[in-house]
Amino acid sequence: MKILRGYVFRLYPSEKQETLINKTMGASRFVYNHFLTEQIQLLEHGQKEKTIKKQLDELKELMIKYPWLKEVDSCALRVSIFNLDNAFKRGKFNNNIAGIRYPRFKRKGINEKYSVNNYRRVYGEKIYDTIKIDLDKKVIILPKLSEVKISGYGGKNNISGEIKNAVIKKYAGKYYVSVIVEEYMDVLPIVPKNIVGIDLGLKNFITTSENKIFYNNTQINTKRLKGLNKALSRCQPGSKNSQKIRLKIQKLYKKSRNARKYIMHNIVNNILEDNDIIVVENLSIDSMKKNKEVSSAFNETPMYEFVRILKYKCNWQGKKMIQVGKYYPSSQLCSVCGYKNSTIKDMHIRKWECPNCHTEHERDLNASINIMFEGLKEYIKTVDNTVQK
Image (cartoon, rainbow, N blue to C red):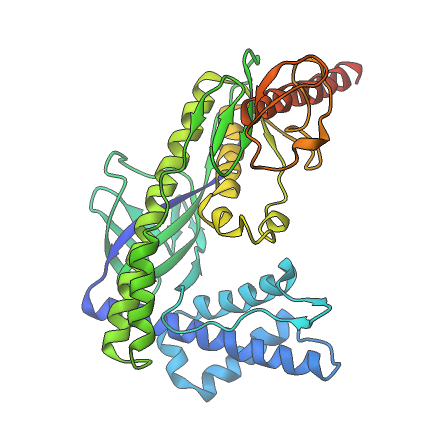
């Protein structure tokens, strides 16, 4: 099957290339904010927003009005228009009680990046791409930038597949490129032998039905973060000192994010190594974050990221991931007799005794066992439906 795989490399641009990257980021931000302003004005006056085709036509006029836009890759400017359209489509803009919420304007120094697409042309027997990666020379060829030095994936000799696009990012004073490649992967069908249920929580991040517990040990250094934010509030906005402190804050977040990503992949690999069917809860994390008592803890617990990684790795390995309904009362049911105990909705209750069969339960382990059995029921249904067809 065909999959989309992302490769992230560290970029080492020359001084001239670094200047061009910063100019491209600024130009993409300018085009995005320009057309976002136009769309907001049209919608607030009750008019229909402009189509992408019209915006692309107006981009040519904009490049004549502002000649410095011609210095950068025109593909990056066009992609920023498509990104704006996607921002509207994804629901960032919607009507609610408080009024109309529009996509946010892009700001300098915050999440700076731009995207370019790869254009493949075939002439005779040769294939020409606008984006190329040479892992032997440790370089990547990007539009307008030519060859840029990279590092990463030292164990790979080459990247097979067709490059679709690349995203050039600047974070914490460093440059990165994320390349999306369409690859073909052989996924062999497997006969499921083992099943595991997973309960996601705040105290114990992951508890499996086999009574394995995985903890989330990647919480950010809140004491240092508070100190840096206090120092930033005392700085003059836009000063060199404020830029230095912002850089330190970004490095702190990046260190925590990288550690979290490393732990998430290790946990997923550990679970998939011994199991063929993995059953997890379909939690409504956004609604759970509205609880003020646990909202900060949810920000530190990457439940969505864990499920996302688990899902695509199951697809790659031919394994089955099942999500039980978000309203399934896994914590309230006795895994032995099925009695529903509605008195233990309180998350502070970690252990309880079933009033019906008098079995003592540990909250998370009991929930994971219930989730496993519920997932097994769903799997049997799908197998029966397949056999009947």
